[in-house]
Image (tube, rainbow, N blue to C red):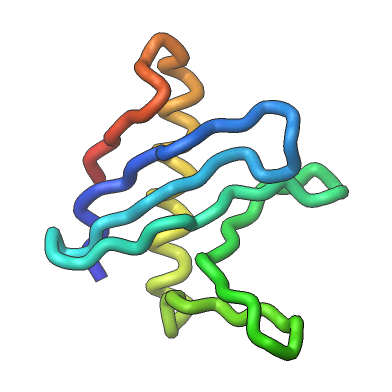
Length: 98
């Protein structure tokens, strides 16, 4: 999996959801609504886009299927997020090329 672009869509400072992110894979496929969330213990993690089922349960609708893909995605998403925060003078939406 080659992530060719990471877009920080929205940044939140007060909520447990810290940002919404979109990624482009191999320049041909995009995954939107990836969330960066701060846990109650203060750790950041990535939550994939999900859909609520009629039963009330939630189900991820897109996700990496192996640990190497997860590590690659996490590393690039967090790198883009921290770079975006360092460059706070950037507009509300920013594109960070992977």
